[in-house]
Picture 1 (cartoon, rainbow, N blue to C red):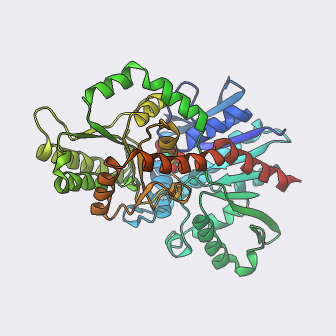
Picture 2 (picture 1 turned 90 degrees about the vertical axis):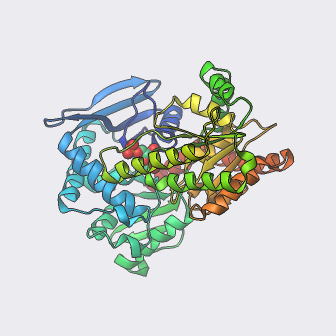
Length: 458
Ligand code: F6P
């Protein structure tokens, strides 16, 4: 079998804790299974030219971490990736701040990734680039003479042409994507949007049957590969963690109250302010819940140097304070709002101990926390998932309580329905979701993608 080379902006070195959900957990599970090389930014910033990557081998995976210059991180990561592509791809133009300087830094960091990765490549490697930070990577690798198959998977939504063309350099971005052999998306609607972009720029003839596209001399595959989780591993982690001191202490602290939980990176796409509002509306409309439920929101800080993230953090602090100020009692805090991360297994233990899981982003590529919530549940007494229709996961987890996160009153009613749902209904909804995440787990995802990439080579 060919060696798998995964490339992502964020690389989680062994023994470090990954952010909840998301790419790092997914890539790590896939790589632990197949082995290979994982190349990316180790998260360190320096004030000189980056040197060669730091290599660590553990459990069949070679981790190759490069450092980035602080100025590049500011313009490439905080700038073009997270103040341009992120809001644009999530249809949230309020926080879209394009500059040429950021665009140039983005190009330069992709060139640097290609230059540092190139000497590590072997002839039969399959190269798999992940996410919006690395769209130009294939173009830069091809310029260095790389002929191995290169795939790209986008973990976040892909916008329709009417949104994408807000980006002054959208044509370059699309041309860069055509330099991959396989371009993968989370959902059919992301693929449809990509088709709308390719047809707009290159004409309708570029769209071929069988999920292929042709631009000039190049033919490539564009298809849907919804990411999953390692269902058994999450289940085991959750069962074991449920017995640990930290989870037991949390459960004891509830003193019999029902637990609603949200676990999200602190990001404006996650719909947290609206979720807090919905919770207030629940407490207003159904006062029987006062003193009888607890909502824990775990929201580790992320991208803290980006202005929009500073704003959302302030807004959430105010909102949580307002709710607690208004509804709390001497012996009851309605919201416990925590800006910290926990080890993955502890989080899974928390999810298992919850009656209701809240996953209500205003837009999300997939949302692996939704799938982790399902995988972590006790099948004899499962919790209820409240899931936004704006998350990719809603295409598969159709028996969750599906909500529009903008309709906060409807979300409040869904919370009430979840809190009072009968055991037979909870079991029925859970069984269908478990089936869905088992059919399409993290291994099925990486297998399908790498097989497609291999078939291109043939
Ligand atoms: O949602 C996109 C994503 O790449 C996730 O897959 C990942 O967990 C998250 O963003 C990480 O963001 P960052 O690397 O900026 O902390």
